[in-house]
Length: 240
Image (tube, rainbow, N blue to C red; front, side, top):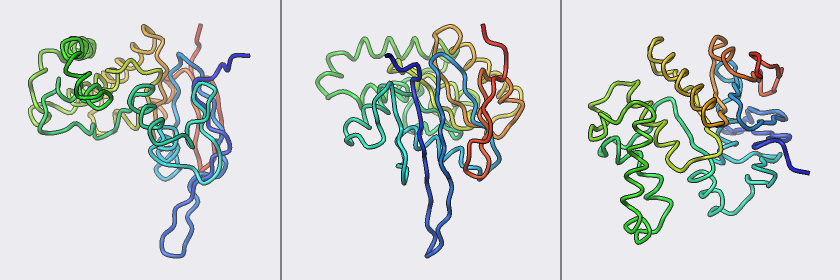
């Protein structure tokens, strides 16, 4: 039977240590992410939601529990497989963009292709890669800023460049950590509208971390994090 969930977390526990003090962050989290939906993980600062996202992205490892991607466990896979998962299978959008300041917008968008291929393969396919990067910038309304560096762009433009970069390898899902947290209200609403449009038009699965209940209500499914536990799961809006 085919697994209906594109991404799952099963029994995730995670603690950090400060000197001799153990600080539990996740206390047994289970979450199932259905393909083609916008999923919000909402909670206050310190609730564990960003830690969970880092574990889902294999940027961190759970103390116990499993992360399953398309029916196969990924958190304990080889380093090469986890690198490929982050480079090809998922896209990650950060609150503070994480664009390379010395590169232009299009060069930042090209970075996943450059990292994920050998130098020879990238050189051989560089024309196709550039055309796709231009298409991704155009998709987020930023093609006219292709040659501009991050210091020459607004916060909203940098976030759109980060979204274009995350889409570059045609990922199965996007993980977005507070994608509007560093933006003003109007710009944030523009970014949310763009993410919603991507999900609807391209059947893209999105997992969005947020502390804002108003943002969470715009998602298809809302998961609430509190004190390291997944407190509730409920549809946030009617979905056909």
